[in-house]
Length: 537
Ligand SMILES: Cc1ncc(C[n+]2csc(CCOP(=O)(O)OP(=O)(O)O)c2C)c(N)n1
Ligand SMILES: [Mg+2]
Image (cartoon, rainbow, N blue to C red):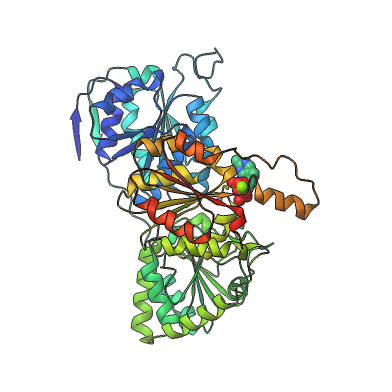
């Protein structure tokens, strides 16, 4: 479908192109370079959210994308807007999230000439190209529709990643007479080859001790995975990014425990592992020195041909979208065997769960996490930061829905949880949203408390307060390094919460954690729930 309209400037035309793509929300901080984008926004149907820092903008867009299944869009200024955003863009790149980063760029006549123009980066496109699928600079208004179409081909394609489109200020301001507005549909994902499915069925039917492993790419494929579990007797384990793909209260579900023994060993010794939408990356097996050796057959399903043999080589690689491939597999298996092995899958999962070997100290968090769990409605969303409480939660806290645990553990930066929770709450206003964050991590993006308060979002911020960088103190202890540089906390988090317009509560018993969370979900503003580390058992 192609139509034409007559916006006044290239910046306004860009907003029209986003509307055509169904974009409903953008996250950004305006500047003198991006005024034409804002002229377009003012007359559009698109909602603009102003986080208080560009890193918060991108994390919020990431949280929005993960929950809404749509792409997250950011509008940034040249230079500092882009460099402030870079950490969060790199994080989304690590986790293959669909983010469209639109920024202004130095005016064409000054770009890459080092003339000291306002906000100039030596080469903004090169800077962004290493953390995006691609970074493109639009040199003339006529190039804009093509650039946006190329961006959406990635964003709505089988393996999404962030894309950066930079538009020089002189191009943004240029009048356009007419812009082609098109809504080209995204390319269909690859469908699995019948011969590959057949071979997978043969392997799975003959398996005595199969396992199913789901990564972030299989987050929407849980129903089909559960059907395969039921006919093969395979327990289902996920990576942190795949957490909740199958409800973690499902009898065959092991949750995101793949890094713990004996689940890790079960993967190593299974006669068949069906691994879907996972890179098998080092961070997925964080507490193990090596990836599992997979002594049996490894069947890998991925939309990305580059991933089929990444990490560990597949015995059988199936190129295909996770949901469609698993549905086709389930269908063939059901038709072939007619056997119900769900009791066997449940028994094996129960046995593995009962013998989980946690890392030293992890069990001290169970009491607080049990209290959190008791207050979580079934549709709750949790955003997790890089804090000891969340490391344990990733494997311990059961979640019942896909796309409900937002944890960019791969890039592992501090500070994503609060802005991701904000984006999640914007995507799903009716669902309860909490974030788990440490006293160190919160300070990285603490300004977003102002955003959450201004928007009246009832986000619950569970602050694990151990007065500094607990994880690093522990690492220093293990390495025999004296504590140095690890006391980076704040004096009074309750005053901070109030200063930003949030409610604040400091709990002193585990029972109060659940009560405070329940109250927070029902409030009309964010609540910072400060949980002192003394509550660890
Ligand atoms: C941007 C960034 N800088 C430094 C680190 C290293 N780091 C990892 S965990 C951690 C401690 C975080 O402290 P806090 O948020 O209070 O969580 P805690 O470990 O105390 O639970 C640090 C500094 C990091 N992951 N990211
Ligand atoms: Mg801390």
